[in-house]
Each structure stands twice: as C-alpha cells, then as structure tokens.
Image (cartoon, rainbow, N blue to C red):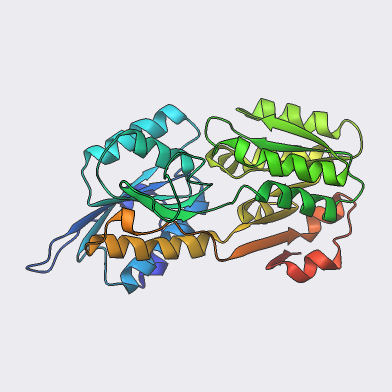
Length: 330
C-alpha cells in the first residue's frame, strides 16, 4: 500500500506514532507534529498526507529513519499549551506545526531549543514568532499563511459575490486566532472604500456564533468574513448553518468551509504549504539552522465557490468569480 493511501486511510491517531524499524546503522530521527485540528475532524488527514509524502520523497521514511509523534490541537488554549509542553518534553529532533498559529506560539513559550517549522501561520512577525521574515533568528521558521492585506481582499470578494451589502462582520476567536488586529485595518479600509459598515465579531462558543449571525441577518444587507483558526475550523458546521438560517452570505479563508456548504473561500493552498514545509524539515535534519532559513510566503492561493449555496441565498455567481475559481461545487 502506498504511503499516501495509508495516511489517507487513517481513522484515528491510535495508529500513531509508528515505531520506526531502522536499518542497521541508521539513526532514527524523531519528528513531533502538532496539528491544529481536532482528531475527530477528517480535514487533518490531507495536509498530513502531503507532508509525509513530501518527506518520503526527500528520503525520510516512517518505519525506516524517522518516527512521527502526532498531537492534535483544539479550541482550548490551555490544552494547546499542555500539549506543546508535552511535545517539547519528548525532546524530538524537530517539531512541525500544521495549520495552527496558537500551537506554534505555545511551543515558543516553552523557550526550548528544538527547531520548529510552522506551516500556515498568519503573519509570523505580528504573531511574535520571528523578528523578521528574511532572518527569523532563534529556533523557529516556516511558511506563512496570510498577509495582513487579506482582510480587505476577503471583503472585496464578499461584495463581488453579494452586491448590495450594507455592513459586514469579520469573525474570529481572539484566544486562538492570530492577532486579529493584523486583518482589521485592511478590512476596515476596504469597508470604507465600499461604503460598508465594518463590524468586529469575536466569538468563543456556538451560542456567540448564532447570536452574531442572527444580528447580521436581522435586516437585509449583512455579510460575513470568517477568519480561519483552530476554533472556527472546528466549528465550521455551526457557522455555515447559522449563516444559512440567517440568509447571510459569507466568505471563508479555508476551502474546507466551502466543501461543507459555505458560499465562497479564498486563501492559501494548504496542501502546497504542507509539502513545502517538508523541505525545511529535510534541510534542518541534514544540518541547517532555522535562523538560516527565511520565512516564506504563500505561492499558491485557492478559491472555491459553492453554487448550491449561492442559489439558496438568491445570489447569481458572477462570471468574474467563476473564471477565477479553482473549485466549483455544484
């Protein structure tokens, strides 16, 4: 069975870690992987599969010369910090975070010297992870997910697919998300340009999600931008359902939302970042220092649109979006 198929078929972290059986003379390297998803959320399987396949292509095969220890995040910051402490205590050769700014920050708080490669962190400078992108310094480097200007881009796309908006909210969890302030300036600037009233919508629970969407949908002209983080990702079903009930068009930053019934998503290509992160792991395991590897920005973006959801909202998806979409869900 191929490695990619094996990873995709995993239904539980119980299969991990796989005990490496090194060939005689090989030193087994230990890689800690901190995934910013609940274990019960199947969306973690694809980025992990891309990462491990890319590692294998570079000569690092689980069961031969590496052992991978998995930990799963949640929307509980205390649990994230406890898991970060646990991973650091295991003293792996390197730690990789897939899709979690909060997990990366928690690892940094441990003040360890273990190299850390992050994949899909929002603005690592604003998040306090690195001093500069070109010279990260310390033991942390990796691949950024979003730039601060994306706040305005998401709002522009929302107004494009849902003309007639009068106000728009940006939803995030302030405890789990990257510093939300990094997106708000561009979001508010775009709102002024589009003559929309900007609204900040921090949420911590399903009840707060419901209340925010009910308020937005109370009168026509409300729209929503959802920032992808560990909390909103885990609660995407309640967010999508509440938006549908309140007849509120929404733009999401992760394609998982659109596949699950959201209207439109626009953001980094997570599979690409997962694959690219393996190249830094390879270089560090072969002797490079994290401080020598500049933080890289996304090179691929992904847009997905759900035509069924658009129809339910009474929207006609403009040709300009259809032509740019990487994925059109009928």
